[in-house]
Amino acid sequence: MRPGRLTILLTLVLAAPLAAQSAAPPRGTTEAAITPADMKTRIGFLADDALKGRDTPSPGLEMAAAYIADEFRRLGLQPAGDSGSYIQRFPYESVRLRSSDASLELRGAGAPRALKLGEEWFVLPAEGRDTASGTVVYVGSAGTPRPLPEAARGQIAAFYVPGTKLDANWQQGVVSVLGPAIQGGAKGVLIVLDPGFTAEDIGNLQANLGGQILPVPLVGVRYDVMKEFMASAGADLDALRATPPAEPTVKPNLAVAVKAAVTGSSARVPNVVAILPGSDPTLKDEYVVFSAHFDHVGVGQPDAKGDSIFNGADDDASGTSAILEVAEAFAAAGQKPKRSLIFLLVSGEEKGLLGSRYFAENMQVPAEKVVANINIDMIGRNNPDSVVAIGQDYSDLGPIVQEVAKRSAAQLKLTVAPDLWPEEMLFFRSDHFNFAIRDIPAIFFTTGLHDDYHKQSDEVETIDTDKAARIAKLVYELGRDVAERADKPKWTEAGQRAMQQIRQMQTGGN
Image 1: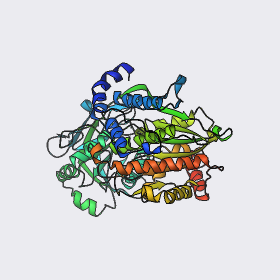
Image 2: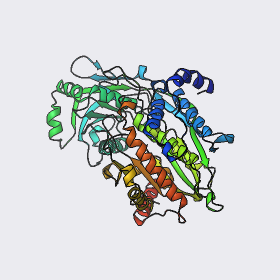
Image 3: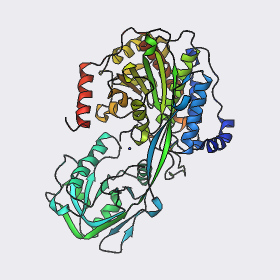
Image 4: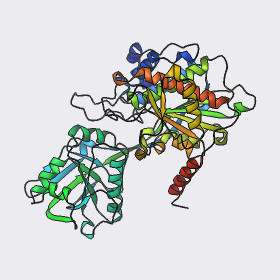
């Protein structure tokens, strides 16, 4: 969950040993086919080490796409991808840091010190610029954006960014210093990380930054390393952090040199799409879209246990598995719903919601015929008897899901909570957003972030499969309700205002 940017033969060869361990779950006969055992089997396949974290692009991603397509085919759903297949491919320009060539050297009063990438520092490289060096000018702490001081123009602007949780607040802190620094002419930006950042945290962060480049290089340095570096020139980082300077602190004998080259490549990566036609002669030309992303962030630095694979069991093998279970339940049901259903599994979500954006721009059905999007991203953790439905205030889907939850309370024992983390702005950070921005009412189910988010420890063993299955059943019931109703879901005034604000931001206020 985030905002922002192989071959069939190889897929089959790599999948061979895995198939013996992770057979597809048996097909059920009704919606009762949605079971904790099936959820565990599906998540176990998608989060297996053999898929290497399902990065976009990667052979593991192709293995996942082939598995999903095979399941749609087995269920008898209509293909809705390219050339009569279940796979819809879209272009992806991959930009990767050449880690072996990346370096950061601190040049202080003593001998220069080279830092260890992924342990002591991370980097976002600059477009068209492999190197940058200059005097370190400590400007202050992140907060309200302000113009870059003249002393930092043409130098390396350094800022302290508080926080150890990589949430929207931390990201906003980075943005608050990065924008003015770029506009003010800094050669590069150095973030002094919070003392709570560990070497493992930095490794995870570097692994999750793939494919992103900036106008100037951005480096983050571990607090203890930066403190020692500044002390060599008589600067007290603790004091500077506690009492931000009125003027930038310039130490001419403190400098850094960063090298961060990138390699570019092109690929065509998969979404997987299927349709279950509706039963009503008129309403079958309208569609309810169920969506989740099946990609994750791949392989990175090993953790303390030596594990380098980010399996993404919750993010979002749990949502992908739920969509497959919902599809199986609808396919097995005797009575098809009145409206048609689209089951969409996308890749490129972790690179900036790319797959869902491409699908929304290239649907095989008219966008005005899509009446709703129900999106699932991370439903396997936290409180066992609740799920958050984000966007309830924005459309009729909010009251409808509450009706469904009340009607199904005895069976599902689930509380559908409102957005518990409004500061995270989650409605704008998952794949449903690409439907909402096109005037399609959307709702987003999640059980929230946790300590294993985007870490190697997001493994199938951590998933509450009973809860995930109950959420899948809730999504099934909601989808059937929406598909059967005479009236389409509509935006509320709050939803209309939110979408209008987003469009104004995208068009620069025009």
